[in-house]
Amino acid sequence: MHGRTRRSFQDTRPSGASESRALRRSGGETDMAAKPGSKSAFVLFDVFYEDGSRRSNRKVPAEILGGLDGDEPARKVIQEQDNEIAKASGKPPLAISQLVRVGGKKK
Image (tube, rainbow, N blue to C red; front, side):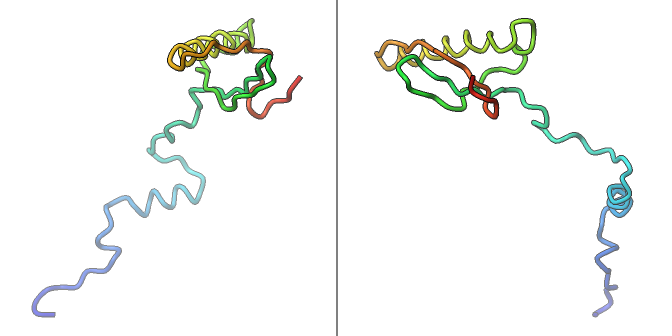
């Protein structure tokens, strides 16, 4: 080998790599951060309009939901979104008849 020593793969790993892998296998905790987005910042809604049309997967910030008003704050946010869309398109906004969380049941 022309005077150089041959290193095995194990010698090239950063120190501690095998320990963290062993901890994961054994169910031990590691110093790794939680996955980003593990708790969703948005709730998705299907919106049903009075003319019978539907828009799917409308995003509403999760932080405004869940109080005494339940999902009612979502209606206001989606109406504001619809007003902006209507303004940009030149068409009047549609009246919302019902909101359903994605994965929820339609009433």
